[in-house]
Image (cartoon, rainbow, N blue to C red):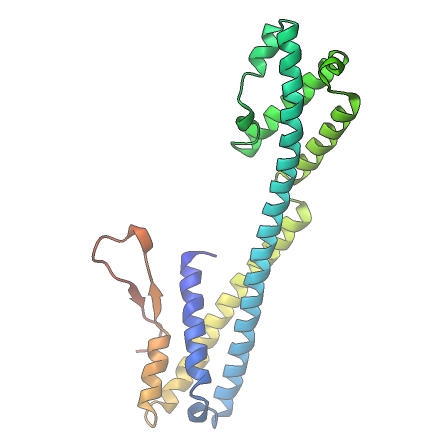
Length: 233
């Protein structure tokens, strides 16, 4: 979510809290009761979707990290064998190609990591016949090939997970608009109906409808939060 959406979500929850604690004031109005129940249901759905969206992102990240860790561990072992062979055989070209540090194999951009893994895999097969003397056997190459394929498939996240994530974000956006519209066109207007007899409640409701927009580190010293008014006067 954007910071704007985070701030707006806090406002929604504040409004719900005010309405929940002042039910005897507005409950006699059937239209207010209907609007409140719809608002509460939509906000519950929005909260659930936000958790779902965060879990999707967290799941993708966790799986990608696990696959990267496994393939990098195997790549470092095979690189060690290749370097040992290159030194014994005085293969200066191979020594230069593998001159990067072990820590660099698993660090950097996805593209950079992929290029190093592919280079190591290519050279491992090229010199496979010589690597048995340094402890690298065909089973190691097979495992490395499989791990590389698994990591490659998750580099940009599974297509199904991407689609699920997009659908969750689209539904979150739709609910933000729906709740905004419900508040502006219904509950805000009905709060004006009960204002004359219940000015204290109205002021609390009006206060809850203000969106507090903290600018964070970009604020200049001494700046406070910005308050964005809603349609309420």
